[in-house]
Length: 128
Image: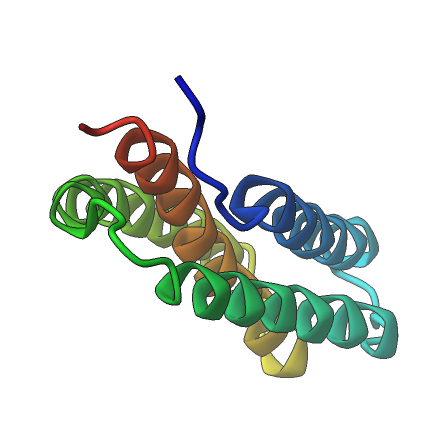
């Protein structure tokens, strides 16, 4: 049986996830002191760009199990929204504010979108 040719969704997703995690770790390591934001902003921008490219390439796949993808994505997104919210609460509780908080929040959003895409793609690609 030949396997259908799919875009490198998993590889791009892991690249995007790695970039946003490095940005978050970089910022968190410098807190509560002043954080130079340029490296984190560049990593966040690159991660968001890779995520967008990943979603666009996936959207172009004909005959993909979209029903199963969105069925799984809905619940995974709910779970990761809760996880992201808890992490955001920790940053707020530790008095993170200003531009650092904005970059961390945007990083959490990219993270909370990325993981459900990876989970949903993995399930839907094997759906008959």
